[in-house]
Image (tube, rainbow, N blue to C red; front, side):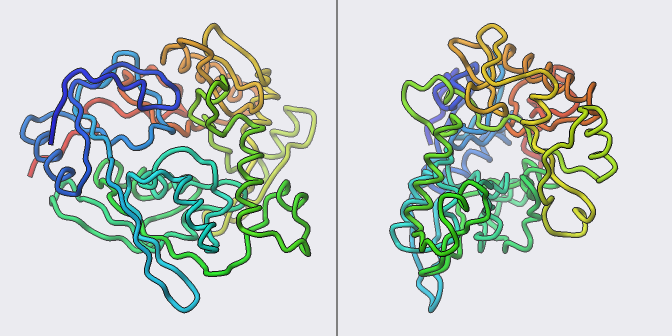
Length: 371
């Protein structure tokens, strides 16, 4: 395993922002992952795992530790009577994998087409969009336990999936390094048509194919600046910067009173934790707080097509993006009493530089635990 020094990290992110890694290595095998953990532990330096860089904002000073870029490749398929189990290495491109499943006429992730990043990141954040979440398709997650230095496998039921959450980014944050994800998809299954725009495009009796739905999703994402297209300034982002708040009906009443209008609302999801709760679009809250599409603050701004996406309008710094994010979060909290949570991981920022809804990864947080 080659370890480089002072490696620029901005080219590894969709934001195109961030300083260098003090040390940098690329894992193309599970042995590389184990070796990197041992290397970091032996030197008592922090370790950060980098996938596709599509959900990440790196501080301008960079990261004073080892950045391990996951580049494991390979896809295998096991056929069952009515399903196919895809075993996919963590470094595989997510959208390419989705297209593979669509070409194979396997349903379960077609609405997640066009999402940038790699396979390994999908169970961590329980990636979801347009009526689907990977939690409904994941069969098993294989990962390296950085404490026991052994590879372990988790069934989907053991992953703690919730809205944009899993055990990997909450209770066990930093403990496991995902190396493979197995998905159980339905052979010849019908596409998922829960999202309103998809229902409009494909009526119940339309006989829509998986390929047609996947392409429609990509078109929708492009209209919102959420599809990576060369030369499109709105694409220099980390996608949605804020999560949609899950609130009680009492909070909805407060929001309506503050806005002098009823907010849009959607089901919060299944499970006892979401009983009596609904999801309110963060984009609507941000707009009502005075931040519209196309708003700019120097070189950082809001996408011209989607209020949730903060963008690098050209040579923006991480500090400028974070300042805009904090201004937005503070304005929403002042008007509605809601604390917006960031979706992207914030790497290398100093404590206190992030608004209460942010979740920064401090340079000592990812330190490998001693044996």
